[in-house]
Length: 291
Image 1 (cartoon, rainbow, N blue to C red):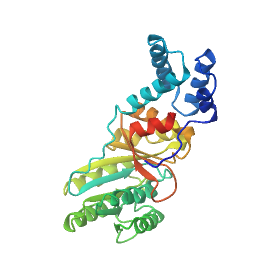
Image 2 (tube, helix red, strand yellow):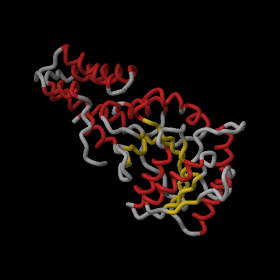
Image 3 (spheres, rainbow, N blue to C red):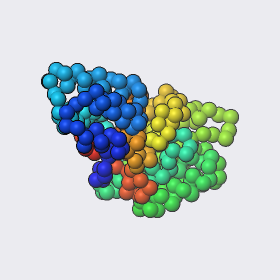
């Protein structure tokens, strides 16, 4: 993960740069900071309850020690979910899903670039055929990432056929990884989940699907999660990608979304550049989040 300052906010930092001893005000300020950082009320309450119990059990009085305990507690909860990408199959086929507007297409370009840094041969497939702009946007990002792309042969081509062609080419040309873009919504009468199910069935006639990654916009927080519930329920999602996690204000959403969905965060996007998508490491994230 790129070196960045992940401390919550000025208010949060003030907790640890103020009085050396823990006071009632310390606890109030910490609760405010956790809520502000989008941990959500339930996760905030459980973190505070556990931290209070630990502070009392170990008779901790110093804010610096409380800070270490908080960091360790958050890391432990983050690490309860395995962020490892499953890429052992050849080709490893990855479906990328999510509502339109979350940065799904740009995420695929960044993900492809991330994988090429590990000397992986990557092919992307533009199966969001209902939006011509999505195909062209993905082609632009594929070019930036230096990877090949399979595009629809005609406008409005059946997404499942594009997915089939992508996987077939990956097999024939020995690509290690195939990343397939999918629609965030349809302009047809067919249900979106039915369409995704069809794409998956067609792919699985050729190769197993290694990952189904759901892209979420961290800045929309709980609202974005609510919008994506159908994907979680019906699309066989195996992991999450959080985009627009540039600032500290939404850092808590990483833990909140894992515990709400039971799904691991596998990738995080921290900016607009091609190199701004990275793997998720709980230890590093907790360290940068809390300091």
